[in-house]
Amino acid sequence: MTATILDGKAIAAKVRKEVAERASAFRIRHGRLVGLEVVLVGDDAASVVYTRNKAKACEEAGMRGVLHRMPASSSTQDVLAKVRGLVADASVDGVLVQLPLPKHIDTTAVLDAVAPEKDVDGFHPVNVGRLASGRPCLVSCTPAGCMRLLDETGVSLAGARAVVVGRSTIVGKPMAQLLLARDATVTIAHSKTRDLGDVVREAEIVVAAVGRPALVRGDWIRPGAVVIDVGINRNDDGKLVGDVDFAGAVERASWITPVPGGVGPMTIAMLLANTVQAAEAAVAS
Image (cartoon, rainbow, N blue to C red; front, side):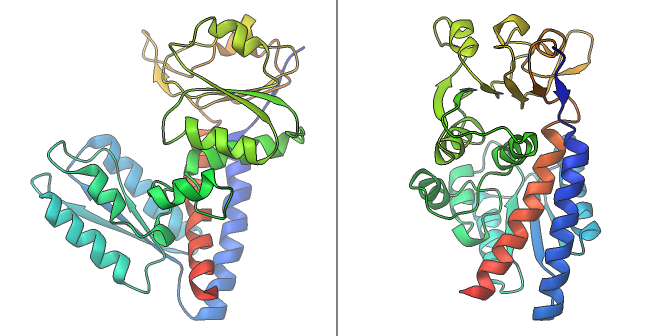
């Protein structure tokens, strides 16, 4: 068996097209653009690239994407003032604070200042709680993207045994909640799980999000399993690789995401979808 590759670039393009259609309908109906405001504190090179890409993606989807750059010397109060001002602006539908923030800034306080209804990253504790309670909410973009990838396979999740390798609040935990909501039988594992290989071998759905290159070995993959690799790591040769041994897993899985080009492109696409969702919910309330 050789797995079918889940092309994240192509699926993300479909999502962006859907978002553009919804954003256009919103503009026609309400006379303004859907608006996302991104706050970047400091000059971290990767963060600069990410935030520019997010603003550009908004423009390409017919939305307003504004980047607010603040100096690394900004205080927690400075950042809180900026975030609260954006939250109070009725023309702003989504507010995103690019992480990581400088170490001297209280990240929790800043993220909590983003109103749940404008929290397009899905990090606010209210949205986390709503997800755990099975209530409608804005969901963290990467796990939301993983679910869209799973949907594209056509594989039924109801009753399926799923293993999420990783327990972060950004990916692992919300991913498990989303799978549970779709009636999968879910196990959360991690780097310290005893007999991790045996746990993974039971899974019909594997989501790897632990941040260790090739932690999940190819011979751990159950024949016919669907493998979603969230990891983005650099190996000793400087090559981008995932958390799964792709060469081994591709010979056993039915579907698998590549790294790069799998989950990565979905994250910004789902950010755009969250922003449109926030805009639509605001005018409906």
